[in-house]
Length: 397
Image 1 (cartoon, rainbow, N blue to C red):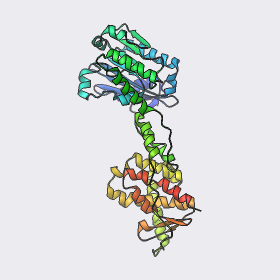
Image 2: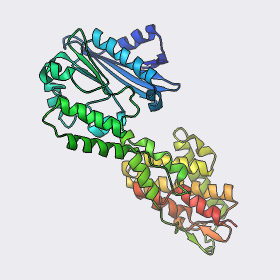
Image 3: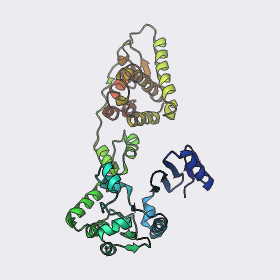
C-alpha cells in the first residue's frame, strides 16, 4: 500500500487525500496523480484519467522496486489476482507486468513505433510478451481466440468480458533465466507465427546478457563516487555502466611540483583572505544542493564531484562564468580542504593557478586542478577532486 498521495503537493495516504489530489490535479480533459511508498519495498505509482469530452479512460503505471519479492509465488499470485480484478472492472486493450529493465531493452512502451502510430493503432498486435499479460477482446480476435487460449504458458484464462489473462511462469523474478527465455520465445512465436523462434530467442538472450550483474571493481580513489553513478542511468543500462566504470582509469594528477615556487605577493594575509572569500562564496552558492560542503572533507569533495557530474555543469553554464567564478572558487575550496585535513600550508602567488598548498614533500596546485576539472564532463571524472585529495594524502608523509 502507498503511504503518500500526491497531487499538487504530497499528503499522507487516505481516501480523502486521494479525492483532494484528484481535484487539485484536474485539468480540462485529464487528471493525474501519484502514489508513493516511503518504506521498503518502494512503490512509485501514477494514475491518469481521461475526462469528457475525451473518451473516458484510466491508465495506471506501477513500479515496485523489489525484484526479490517476486521470486516468491505468493506475492506473484496476489498481483495476478489484483490485475484480474482490475481487468474485470475496467476492460482494457492491453495491460502487462514485467521487469522494467527488460521492458526498457525491448523499447516499451512504443516498441519502435512513433507516437502517431501508437495513438492510431494502440497495441494492435503482440509486439512483446511479458511475464503477465492482459489482452483485450479486440486483440484476442486479431490473434485468434483459439490460438490465444492454446498458448503454452503457466496460466491462460479467458475472462467473462472477452479478454484473456496470460501468465508465462509462476514467478516473475527469474524472467532473464534460460528456461524463462525459452518459454517467453515459444509463447511469443505461438501468438505471432510469422516470427522465427531462433531469432526471437537470440534477442531475448542478448537482453539477459545485458542485464547480467557485473561486480563493481572501481578504481579505489574513485569508488565512493563511481558507486553512485550507475543509479543515474536507466536500470537497463546500469550493468553496462558498471563495466565501463570498472575499466576506467583516471590520469595521475599532474598538478603538483617537487618544490615550492616562492610566494611573490606583497600581502600574503590579504591574498589568503581573498581565497577564503572565494571558498565561502562556493559554500553559499551550493550548500542547499551539497549540504556536506560545510565540512571540507574528502566526502564533501566526492559530493561535489557527483553534483557537478550529475548537473553536467561544464556544458550547462557559460564558459566565461565557469572560468571567472566557479573554477577559482572551487580551487580555493580544494586548497582549504588540503590545509584543513592534511595539514597543508598555502604558498600564494600573484598568478592564481600558480598558488600552491605544501603537503609533505610536494606542493599542490588546487586552482590549476579546478580549471582542468571544469573543462568538460569527461574531465570531471578524469580530474576529480576526490582523486586529487587522495593523491596528496598518499604523499603527506
